[in-house]
Length: 263
Image (cartoon, rainbow, N blue to C red; front, side):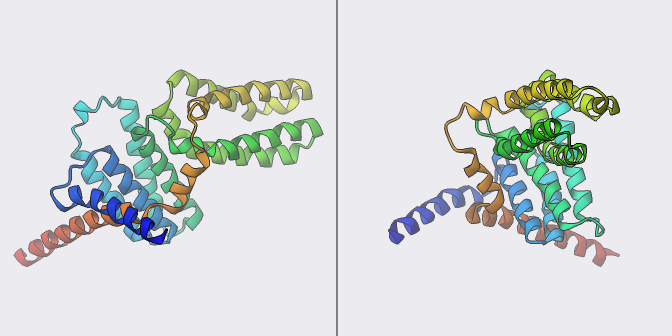
């Protein structure tokens, strides 16, 4: 059994090494691998390397023939802003490790959303989000406003992570409908209406949430397996994309040294 596993691993390595050994053709799949590597480095608290890898992503992203990629201005803005936010947070020493990993996860998910036609990684967060939402409904029934506010903040925290991804992955009208529901609940008047009205509003919002994840639920694969990918990463893909980054960093260092010598 171990021999079979080893054979499979070697085969995968050979498949991915072939394009890596030559001039790399950076497409969305390659950028997806780079974003995953940056996330894994952040989880290891190797923040400087992760930030440098985001710089590498930006260089390779500019090399994409975007005029042929059929990317809307809004989608491009979402990707670049998420990238910038992740890089800024990584380089802020005052920001916690959890928040840095969170920002990289958000970026990782939005890049994957550009690549995946089926089973996008952001869909794997459905369980956590819906469980939190169910608890919010229970809070309303029990009249526990303090617990509701805590669970609502937890929901917003989770939803914020996938928000850039659904912006590029779903119809804008559906996203705006969720925005409207969130604004309504955040309005102070929401706490002043009757318990029945609040529960009904949350029930409507819950249906909208389920609709967001509908495209993921249509696929038969277990979405929890996808979240394992983002949590653990792939050693092979990480090493290959990181090898390209080291080549880029070495070249950058040579250029800087040459400029210093000229001075």
